[in-house]
Length: 482
Image (cartoon, rainbow, N blue to C red):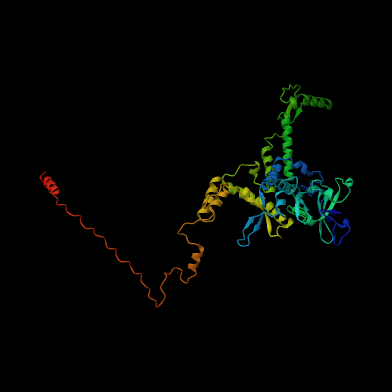
């Protein structure tokens, strides 16, 4: 049987497929890991208390946490990077062999939805299985996220790892296995080697190939929250009135008690709640159920939501549980959320893509653009980038690019003030025996004085000639007589 042009049942020592066994603590059947949590607390299995994913995922906080993490990672840009041999700095590149599958993983999903499904599968089921499709060059051209409930790892006697898959028409499994299409059923299974699967394991508590979902730790709290909401719905459907007891001072036989109960439920419960009842013969109605206020309903519901957030390492206020932090530093808030919740998931995806696509062997790598997540407020951005430009860490155009502004002419060079010295000049100065000694002439040499230029001789102008004309003399006598 062939898949993507090569034989899939390649077993070195164990040629019998029956010798391929799942991990020792894998659940029975081909179902996913922890699809049903049967022992959420001691004695739960004996009491038939099962926590099913289809139930607990309807709890609003659990749905909000899973969708928040998946969407936040999915919205990050994913790019192909290469390390510069001279500067050891990673920069984004485009390579025909790898860039297309990163930009468009398959024919029916965008990159964002592909990453979201990857993370969602890992968080809910504890495992994410990504199938590779190769071309004739053995280069991965498509990636498919498989259903973790019908996928499981198998281990050969020699330690080789295989994966058992079920029919998946979106991934083209049933059309490429070389079997008659009339024989394909939803239970058709295919076995492929581990080299064709990217397996992302979430916290392998029991086995390296068996990831555990955070729901196994908070499923009971989610189920409790659902129970609280169900009881609250029943309470309000009964006119916000708790149940009670009709009592009489004397003895009441069974027929009379049954008749009074049916009459009361028919006329004074449900849509008839709140009507005026007339009681005689000493009958008395007393409430028996605990009211929502006495049971601290809101506090209990908040506690269950906080337990869900704790299991997923999500700050409660991000999903509407509890107040927001008092400080207004957006960068610090996002940094805390990234470091305690998202970083491990992001690093795992990058490492698995590097290995699964063969990027590391080719000198490349995959990297999420964290700037889309760790955004600062406007005033902090201007202050931070402006400080970097003043100190010569950033060129003006680099700071403008981070603020989504166009470049300006002459802004591609970092600048410093004139009185600052370069590190090379300071190193040359410090390499001397006495870095602070003044430069002196060599012994035995007489410095040649620089001759001074001759002083400038001021130019003296001759006095103007005297005017002894008769008119000038007469004018002079006239001015003197006046």
